[in-house]
Image (cartoon, rainbow, N blue to C red; front, side):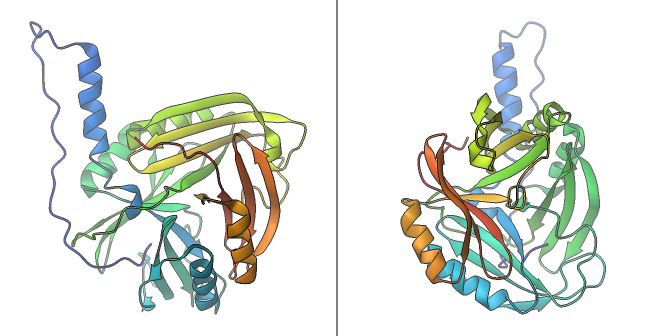
Amino acid sequence: MKNRVLACLLPMAVASTVLLSPASSTSADSDQEADRSSRERIAVGPQYDTAHVYVAPGELAAFTASWKATFGGTSTAVADTDVTPTPSRTKSELIFSPVGTLSVFGFETPVPYPFGAERTGWLLKDFDAGIRRARASGAHLLVSPFSDPIGRDAVIQFPGGINTQVYWHTTAPSYQPLATVPENRVYVPADAVSAFTRSYLAFTGGSVVSDDRKADAGEIGLSGRTYRRISLSSPFGNTLVMVTDGHLPYPFGRETTGYRVTRLTDTLAKAKSAGATVLWGPHRAAGRNSALVRFPGGYVAEIHDGAETPTV
């Protein structure tokens, strides 16, 4: 599911694992590093991965204008197309902003299941290798591979019910690096977090940056409480895993992506002037100020300033 510019992605084979003889002096650490490098080659880069934004009918133009007035950036022409494996129609466009790339959809027909529940789309260097990697990691195919006018797509689901669209272009796009890398915000129940983390890291080639079991739950609307907060980093970008019991006040859990800015108060002022609504915050925790904002069309985003989690 995406509106993406046309360009040829040159075929790239995932490097095969080097087989070592018993006499080899290569250490286990080297084996692990080689395997990790192989996994990393599945990702292209965070500027090619898009937050999937579904807006209310007729609100596409209002959303795009509000987003660009808040963060800056450019957008492609609006296309009227079918981007699902079963018949549907949507107006769509791609927004390039310094804080992240967005695929925006304004459906003119009902949205076929399970589209609309995926939080993001990831560009793969090798589509078939990515599908094999997903299955090997413990994820499963929620939507089997299908062709679209510019490439191939599938939707995978990680343990805990986290849906991600993966895709490949027959023509390689070329996007500028982002000013700041957004974070995928994932709410996972305690019963699923171990399986989710293992699968997610195995697929992305990522690593754990931090794991705070007593984080300030005020940052998810639960003042005076603590929760487990896991920060992950990978070639696909940053991910914040929030382990909760699901007793979350609105609008927490509705946001799928967090965007880093230089100064939160300035950005919130721009957002409000551009027709957005601050639903919660600002709140300071974990070394940053954050707020939740609803843009025209209904998209809810977390926005924060402070230190950025480094990507792998």
